[in-house]
Length: 177
Image (tube, rainbow, N blue to C red; front, side, top):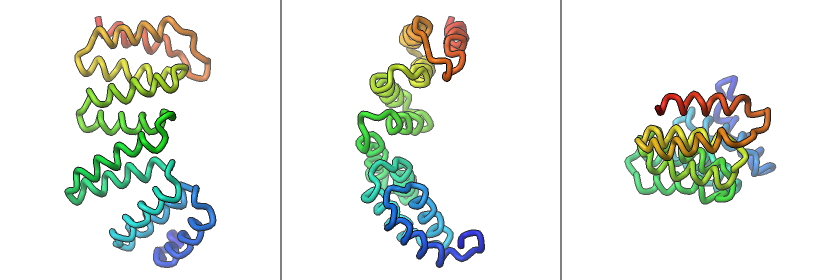
């Protein structure tokens, strides 16, 4: 229905689909988009709250809520939505990664570094978090911390699926010197 510009009908169908499969994050997102296209800001906000309630691990809903609250000037509730990214699944790296990216884009590199440290604690065998931590520390001016992190990457063996991680770390290390 959305392809035909019938967002009113799409909303009805998407609500039914959401009720049938409340864990489907894509359905939640499509519902919010359809409500946005109808100009129903309150309905979209209500749908996001329902998404968080029905599928609390739908991290994108928290990020969307934060943006919407910031847009209307409610910074406190926006920040609460951002911290919920981590609280929804504290032992999983995805929320920490999303929050680190948000902190980085906001220029809060100190807080981004905290999140990247949590990512590498939770998933130490994924070099992505280590490389991001090193980059963030370098941007913060903590060359020693960045160097130590990059040396850690160089000392490990990484799965082939991650590509040439050691080359990436060596390039970053050379840039620090």
